[in-house]
Length: 137
Image (cartoon, rainbow, N blue to C red):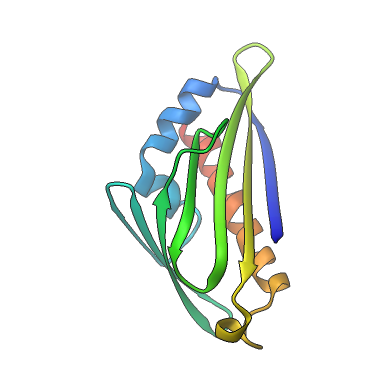
């Protein structure tokens, strides 16, 4: 599996970060997707990456140690999951680690998207979400 990880220290406590993440639609939209729909524990995202249009159906899941985690149920990946871990740091601050792991379904993706393009795009999305958390929490 390929993996993308971004970490950020924030000057707010873990509870404030978890509360901001609880606004799931706003948090996922902060990644810069073209469309985001949240229906309970189901999240649908759509985005244009290079010349490809990507739509994923995700489901929020429990993952030990994660403040939020979701996995792909339908989409271009053979497998894909993302988790956000929030750890207390110092006096009132915290560190947020966002990690996505994925394996490409090569027959579907072909020459249009490769792991490097996906990793670059996902790093951009996770960074945007951490920027949003820093501003919102």
